[in-house]
Image (cartoon, rainbow, N blue to C red; front, side, top):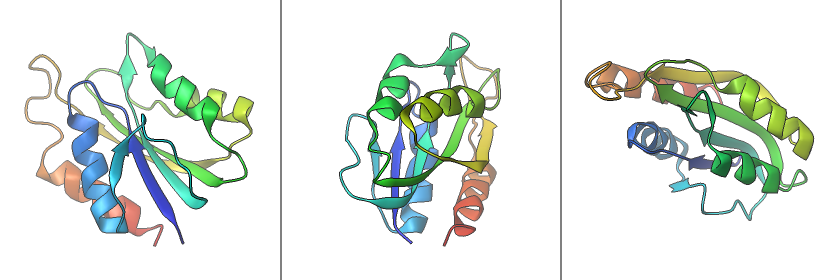
Length: 135
């Protein structure tokens, strides 16, 4: 299996998850400003809600993906208030013709004192356990 990990974060929470997941998969976690040039079976895409939607940069990144190079997107992220961004990412992925895996990882993230310290070590460990299912 081949993997890529890309993330978008404003607070650093999703980056922490991405780095732990990428280490387990033996790849580097990169921001979405770095395109996926190689063919991969799974693209782990970290993102979160900002103003009740995914960021326009995430939408642009997903729209730019080469459907012939990406087997499936695996959604992951953290958020203080809302949970899964799956449906929002899937809307864009469907338009781009890129498949999404039905499983995803999500945990609480700290924002302005809400969920202080999250993602914590238990959240990071859970993210690592999640990606092991893809190996």
